[in-house]
Length: 346
Ligand SMILES: [Fe+2]
Image (tube, rainbow, N blue to C red; front, side, top):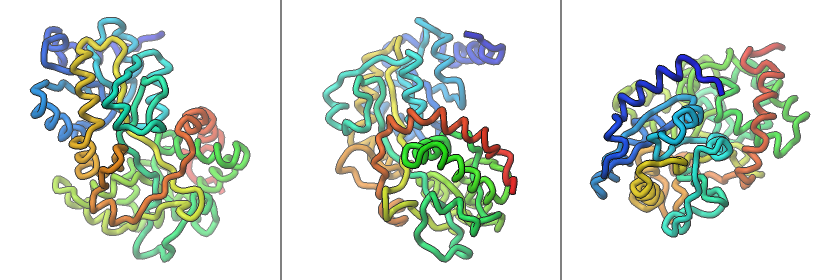
């Protein structure tokens, strides 16, 4: 494996961040996270309050698996937190996780949301929904297929086609329709784009607010986070400009993905890591995920927040997560093949 200069730089930062003694000290757990600190902090605070175990978070926006591989047997990573089934399976396939067989976790998390070998566990689900302009879009129902209809020409905004949220959706299209039909669909969607893919999901809502497009793809929880954002109150205006449409509600259901966790292969604080993993699967944490992160909890019986309920009920596509992971590579190749990120060609 090639280790870039940037990675080596990042490694020395990590050592400084985690501290050589802190990483192995009693009463600590080290978390490598793709999830933004603001999203997981309320959960970690509740965990520390309950157990007295301190949490150290290393946030990365890419290269998490490569990082743990490069650290090898001395990796301070205990728990991996990430989103997307592909990233969870990637971590397993790269050999940076270890199997967990734990009664509490297995009781909490339904079987179809966990790896059969216990190498990863889903904690929440989220829908890849359509944000539609309240002002300019009259219809209240939509399908993903419909997004390629020329009636939306110049009216759709999305983030980067290679982002895992989009690749997951496109992979589900391949699973349902095959590669050739998905390629046609993706080219149609590309030609309906108002501009080159750019920004995050929230930026697409902002673009609808600004009148740059009428329809966008975005994850469900961002709407809740925009609606309640006191730090950047302008996001409330973006949220107010859109309505949430659950695509394919009348047929196969809306594409969903998961956020999840895994136990790192060489976890130095394994016992504390397992305590954290149990905690995240149980009621209090699942409630925080619902109420503060606006996701759908996997623990049966934990209600979604009132804010999320206000979007309407989601009917999740029941396509097995493994099928999404299996079609991910093909989906990513199609994004390049049709030049999705170049924007409209026709
Ligand atoms: Fe996200």
